[in-house]
Length: 97
Image (cartoon, rainbow, N blue to C red; front, side):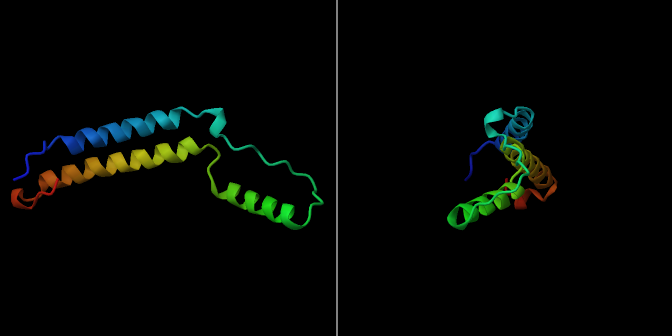
């Protein structure tokens, strides 16, 4: 018999959603990626490979990493709240959360 409170997924979802919103608003400069400088380079070998790899990875990452973390937390919180709401609408014998 499960004695866990039924409100814990709701409280967790609200906490995740709130944390995501706060993190997206707070964007510290330490986590901001620098803008690339567009000038010709004459590097070769390992330095060129490292620079190309770094520039390719920087194109994939968001400009501030807290935005990505905050968005993920918001999606998790909203998903958990939606799951709990749909679980309340399900049959009493089939509720999971």
